[in-house]
Length: 235
Image (cartoon, rainbow, N blue to C red; front, side, top):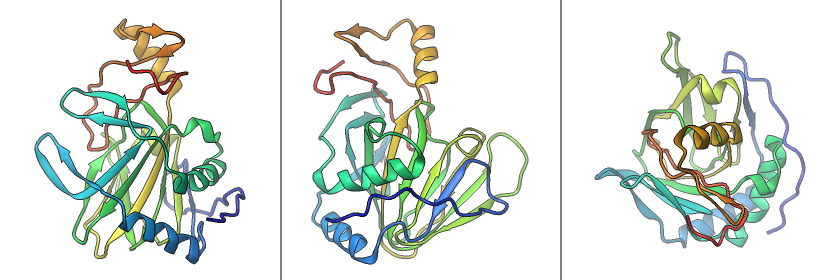
């Protein structure tokens, strides 16, 4: 797949939260078509949130989170077909490619929503790319008064959340009309890691590997993040 690796462009986002980056047509139509063909051949897994089977299905790379144990463990590596997307998305969001150590591809079947939530505090920047169908991403203040606002996520567009939109707002996606896919990439919130490790007193250091062992965040996307110098080692 021949992706052009160029920095993303920030488009003006009137009336939307500060810290939200967005660019339409981030991918070319042929790039999107090739990814969709690849995704249709993958074995997605049902999204089980404490016994509730959501309408969307997922695949995780780098790390996977167990909602029962609230622990993350290493999982399958990033596949080759996602590596160019990961590199280009990192440039768009202004982070290094190596920082994006967890990825997830979500398949939204028609009628699939995702409710109001904030992503787990272990994450810093959150990046999402829309493929196939169109959806609306809604934002409203977290534990504060404010009218919801929405951004249309068109096919081939990309968004990134950082700063105020990441920490002071929650977001949701109403039921989608058509099948869509969304690769999502995240980096690690290092400040949270250091503070949480100190407070918990339970983050062992083994051969330069630091692991967080617990997570009390209960959002539907909560995933415990592990910062490690040796991805093959287990906590």
